[in-house]
Amino acid sequence: MNATTNGGSHPTRPLRVLAFVGSPRNEDSWTWKIMTRIESQMQAIQTTEVEYVFLQKVGVPFCDGCLSCVNVGESSCPEYATIGPIAAKMDAADGLILGAPVHTFAVTGLMKNFVEYFMYKRNRPSFFGKKAVVTATASGGGHTQVLDFLEGTATAWGCDVVTRLGVSSSQMKKPHYVDKVDECVREVADIFVREINRGELGSPKFGALMNFRAMQNMARSQPDSVNHRYWTDRDWFKKEYYTDVSINPWARMMAGYIARKMRRGIRKGNAKPFR
Image (cartoon, rainbow, N blue to C red; front, side, top):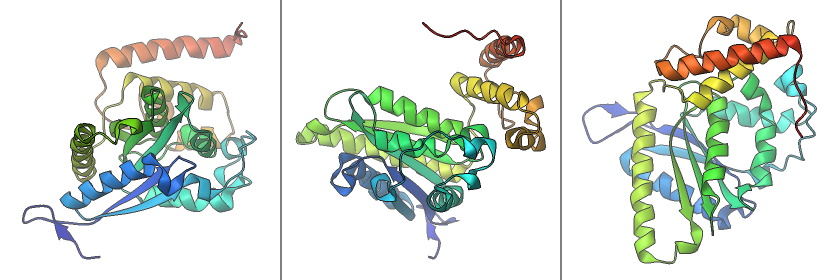
């Protein structure tokens, strides 16, 4: 496809976005319908190629938590023939959209199961600089829980989550609410396109810093493992975060302090069961 222009004289290439639909209702779901609204608004700004991955149609069985992907390597996963090509598409995309409805005030089992197959990305993240949007739909409440889960997942993979959107599907018959949704969708699309084109690495939130420190301690405690080699090759054991970006001084100090306490606890082996 030929390059287009973004309202000016500078040529821009088509954006490539991979969108994961975590609803078992596929094209009948509000999850997909909201994603297509985002796509339409992105197209109005810049040519965008969106590929939808309907997780129900992917059809992987329940992950049994064998941790082969973490301890041996992702290609050892029993479902790698399915997961591997999807991971390659994620690598090639400029941006990701993760979306799911709220089921009993939590993310759907469909999305949760899919994310389990990418546990190795939490140990060996690689999507640095890749932008992401997360979205949740619900007839009632629970948006925050699902949005937090999706944002935390994408961030742990290395993505910069640039914005998030929650929609009450039960209100979508009300014209004034639809107008508000459309306004929010335009804002989401504008931010998404702008941040993909800008391409700069985002500054991590405190939770992302803590996740880095936890993974750092875990990899450090696993000598001769695939994770340890991955971290050593990237010199991450000496870093305060995966990438060289600005970090809030207070967040850096607190994350480092907590990480040192965690590390001492690992060495002493003083973990206790929860009651």
